[in-house]
Amino acid sequence: MEVYLVRHPSPCRSEGLCYGRNDVPVDPDVLAAAAASVRSLIPARVLRHAAMFTSRASRCLGLAREAADMWSYRAGGGESTATVAARWRGWCTRVAAQIGGRGLSAVAVTHAGLIRVALAGARDVGAKLLIDAPFGSVHRVDIDASEASTP
Image 1 (cartoon, rainbow, N blue to C red):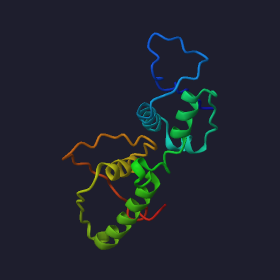
Image 2: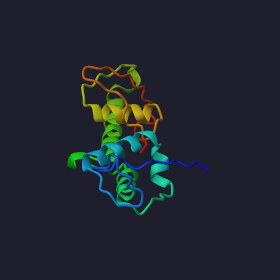
Image 3: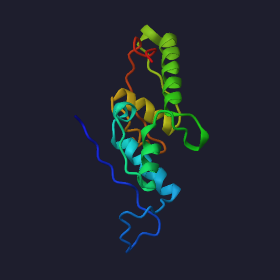
Image 4: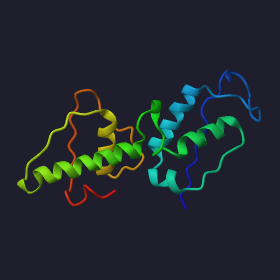
């Protein structure tokens, strides 16, 4: 059995305070950063299927809610990771059909989110979507045309 133990994010105004059983709030930005960190450190298969246990304290409940549903979370109201992954697979299928057996390569200038999804899938790193994709960087992904259309 795998068990991932996650400490809650830093509560607001807690310096020098022994907050223990007190239900102290967490700043929303701190919560979002902690959730992103958890999603990057725990494999997606675990976050999708594992039983989630949490303290009743809001600083723990909030993180548990934010971290458990990484694939459908829509940062800033944009696309979810699942939607980006589906769009990526669809693009791979179309490109494979266009250049398929000719042994050609493709170059795509795109965004960090899609690069991270593509690399996460290619490297089988699951939820570790915080892969470094700095401005101007180049990343190689080998796509098997027969697997491109697999959801």
